[in-house]
Amino acid sequence: MIGRPDGTWLIRGSFVPDEPTQEMRNFLRIRKQLVRERSSHVQRIQKTLEDANIKLDSVITDILGLSGHAS
Image (cartoon, rainbow, N blue to C red):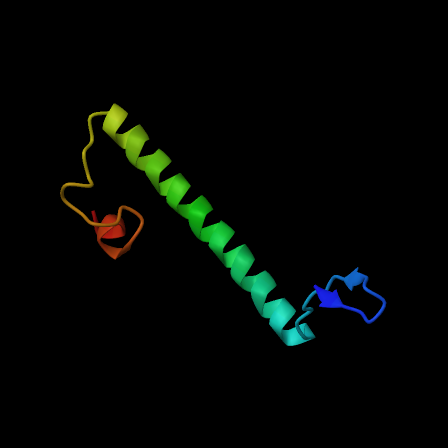
């Protein structure tokens, strides 16, 4: 807050980043969301395979990775 000579107070203005910084923040926000969605889908696939008595995660590290596609 900023004090004024007449005894009143003002709230400081918000920081607004420049356009490239705003775009980068937006891209990073979207990437974070996509990474979360991908991991959710992988977990759903693993659960479906385990329900079918197929336990691949003890044999391969990433079921959608290179070793998963080779199996």
